[in-house]
Image 1 (cartoon, rainbow, N blue to C red):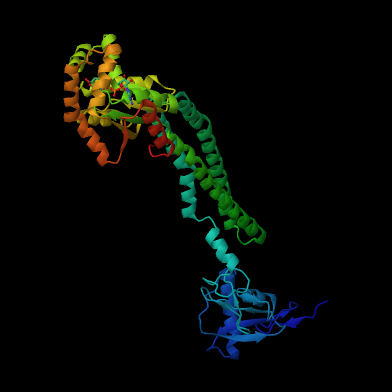
Image 2: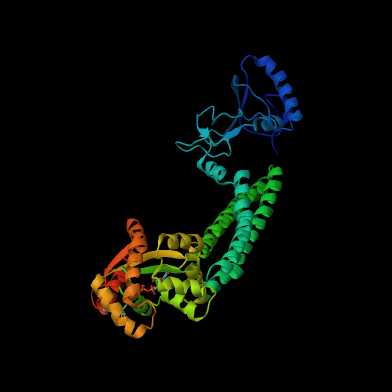
Length: 447
Ligand SMILES: Nc1ncnc2c1ncn2[C@@H]1O[C@H](COP(=O)(O)OP(=O)(O)O)[C@@H](O)[C@H]1O
Ligand SMILES: O=c1ccn([C@@H]2O[C@H](COP(=O)(O)OP(=O)(O)O)[C@@H](O)[C@H]2O)c(=O)[nH]1
């Protein structure tokens, strides 16, 4: 049985034994300590032993083995120094420094402070404080995990619908778009929602447990939940990070690539080289001139306009040619790259193409085949024997050269200034010219 003693502070009989320190204001002498303490005890009761305001101006009174439980509780408002085995008073917002040994303690727990600790907290508390999921980060996670995918979903879906209607997707591109939207994106979105709901539940639990903080175990669980909700928050972030590239991939998906091939006039060999390149590089070859000639034979509504222009060696109105090119690209869904020969022919062609087609395609570069006038004339004369083209005669040929110099030359200069022009010597044999172009493609000098 423990010995009955009298508390040195309040003088009540007790069998509770602990060493301790009690601080009290300096201006109190020994006789008034007792009164003072009673007043403090009253305060303790009033404040439900939670918080007692102390001034800085306190002195310490060391008590050995003679403190009752009430007084001990009072002193327990302070902190325990493991080294000196005493309780110290703890003034709010001040360092916890043991009055005997001057060791500093973390204001949040009972760990001693490490060197260079900040904010009066030990490393663990500092880390927990930074890592815990505060309201701002919670709101961020809300946006990241729920709202952003939600907006993104509707945005991308609308975009997909628009683009699928507008752009000429190849079958594989279309399939990829569908897989992205129908399977991958909802899956990621679903994960995000799950992550968010779990986060919300845990956050509520954390709040509930925080209210009941006085229970140590609950506080511990609450800490774990804090960590866990933080982990979920990170998962949500990751989810978004992983989901995004898929979306980006879709956004870049996929406008057909377009290369233009121009010459220095009729007969420079652009049609011949375009045909060969399409075979070697698996590009689709579209000849603007051929599309126009086909439109004449198929009695298109612009038949007479086209016929008139071709037979005068002048350029057909832009919207007519672009309309035919657009249709041809759209009908050729299996190709991802197109080589368009003989277009654009003038500035208006180019401007109109930019307005009508630039958003549907990815423009790559212009291959420009150089050739001497003499070679061109003799080639066209040779071609006229079999081509059956009404414009393959010397009279119209002359007009076509004039049109080239007046109009097409400007486009060539424009592309040269933009560094988009790749010039090829077209006076060599067909094979050599082709090899030269292929080499540039292989070396990625044409891309
Ligand atoms: N490098 C070349 N050497 C010799 N003949 C060529 C060469 N390139 C093209 N040809 C011939 O010249 C004619 C005109 O060529 P083509 O490719 O139709 O010219 P373009 O499309 O520029 O009007 C064709 O009969 C073609 O076989
Ligand atoms: O974008 C084009 C391509 C061709 N043409 C017309 O079609 C003719 C034949 O062009 P093509 O490119 O087939 O032959 P080239 O004159 O280059 O041998 C030209 O003279 C033009 O009248 C046109 O107006 N716009």
